[in-house]
Length: 228
Image (tube, rainbow, N blue to C red; front, side, top):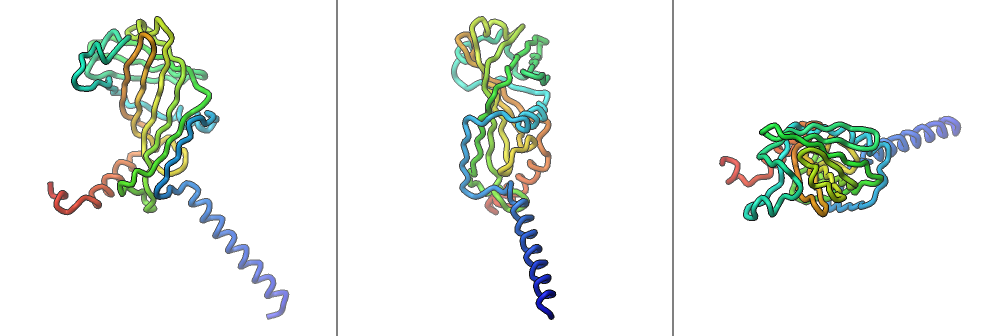
């Protein structure tokens, strides 16, 4: 083999190795690592993030958050009609979200949430053995959005004074920002005359996430518990 041919083969080999390394790097760009604990409290709400969030779809059922013990009046302020469950629908507009809640008895009201400029992101390996198909830990993830809120009808009395909201999306996934990783939501309203929270599921979550997590959970349970 002459020197020219040897040189060409060397170039081809190096190019192939670089391609493999590059492909592996791209493949692991979203990989989650054991022990991850990432807290980003003030990330700009970029166009990509907004697109992801607007792609989330609320399931139709919502619940009012209550704890055992205190009377309802001590836990809920500024909400004229309470119910065991609510039907919720959401509409996305350019600078705000509109969430309509309807009680079992037909009472309704709308919460209007002003679009914030930042989002808080949280991702952590809770080290419970749950992994994705690649064997990487499934991170517990939150996206938290906060801003000014207003409301009408059954919510109206709570907004006689300024109030704010915190909308929290919860899920499991890898290190990348994917809307369909998120399975649940929580909405908190707080102010001088308002204090209550709702929670529910997201219809846009990837269904295979739940199936995959169940398989891993079942496989890691002690044998003595699997037959129960």
